[in-house]
Length: 136
Ligand SMILES: [Zn+2]
Ligand SMILES: [Zn+2]
Image (cartoon, rainbow, N blue to C red):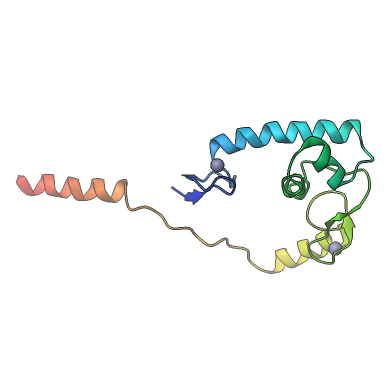
């Protein structure tokens, strides 16, 4: 089991590929829909305009963009490629950098560091089992 701190509220939760706890995920979904609808209606708006109109933190809008869930109509300097700094519309890298990174990724390894694991479950059951057996 992977236990982490929620990126939004800091509470401890069971990690399941999303860095937020359940209630923050729900809250975030609502925010996402609001932002997405606004961008649909106002495709010309830039990140700070969207933030202002939807009253959503610019950082959160950028996260949605980085996750590739939202896409701007035009490349935005508010959303620079994380590698070369060129304005992009969605995701983390410009098309050129993502192509290069893909090549690099295939060459190297990418193992995420394991967060601490709790010593409960099978191991404790095993000890309990052994103690039971001793009695016989
Ligand atoms: Zn949370
Ligand atoms: Zn780039």
